[in-house]
Length: 351
Image 1 (tube, rainbow, N blue to C red):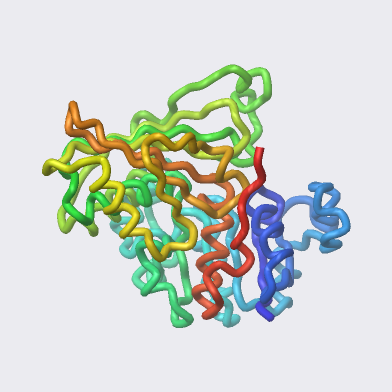
Image 2: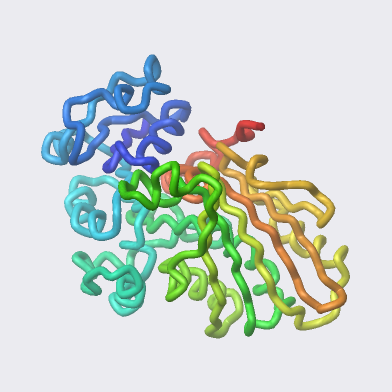
């Protein structure tokens, strides 16, 4: 049985991982760690967990005594890099939700950190060359029992990369002029206080944000560049819409060669033929965020505008599952040699 520790257990990412681990056949929660609500049962904060777990929140010092095989850092940027070395020293594997370990060099991390206004110096730079970017559909070969540190991908990045990867790797689209138009539910901001996230401010309101540069662009451009074999840039627009959870990304690329809708659909289906969590649909499928809610599934609707020679892909994920806790658990399964679908092979909740 895998002993798992969740640091940042009181946030949406932490409770999402708790929900998943409670039904995992080969894992148990050893400790729930946070800096707030120490001594309180997690079920007091999240009553839907009553009867499923009686674990209380503990501080990091108390949790250090608990043996753990894997530590999920459901924490903001800057926390994982400070705590990971000690967890690794105790023999645990670390899966970090933030951007602390998504990049393999201090320079690449500094570019990312500058976009979010953080100190560009990494607290554990020696770990960066050994970290693995945790998107299994692109890096499964590197996610093995020998892996110790995983940088979980950003939620927007998951949606965009899965939507564009087949076309970019195949050379189907030109590498210039790629557009990622992305809409997310309010939960993507986390349990953030402030008037901009109060119900009156969010109800019946949609707005774009971080137009000067979103932090997830760094990983999107790097991963697509690796697939294309050349540096590339994307135009990325993030928007928040008045729903609780879900990401819908509409992705555009100009076709580099003539291709019919059927040919492109076949390309995508072949690329994801053996992927348990990606579903590919034709352009007449009425698929949206409600159909992936609560699941680790990414749904892709493939469309070709033959008039303008434009590929259009609509990519839908649950930002809190495939965009966060679900991907992290998928990574854990691979790191421990378990079936990749363990604890995740189920549909979402509809409607």
